[in-house]
Amino acid sequence: MIDQIFDRQYRAARKELNGALADGLGHAARAFLHAFEVLVRIEYSAPWKLPSKQTRAC
Image 1 (spheres, rainbow, N blue to C red):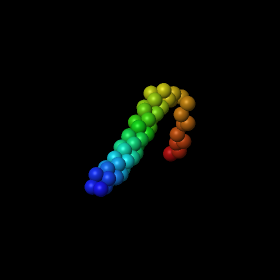
Image 2: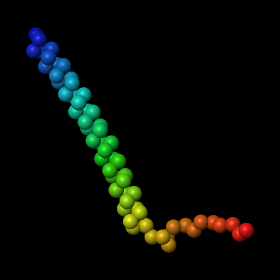
Image 3: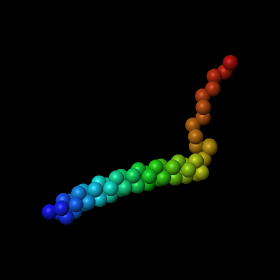
């Protein structure tokens, strides 16, 4: 009986731990992908394709 209770609690804890790890790694992967996309955009953006800023004459 004690072994069954221990096993049930162990499995529940492992399931929760695995879910937390998967969630944390998913957030880290999305953050890494976003940072990589920003760096690629900075590296390969052409300054002549950017819209010009409107300036007012004084």
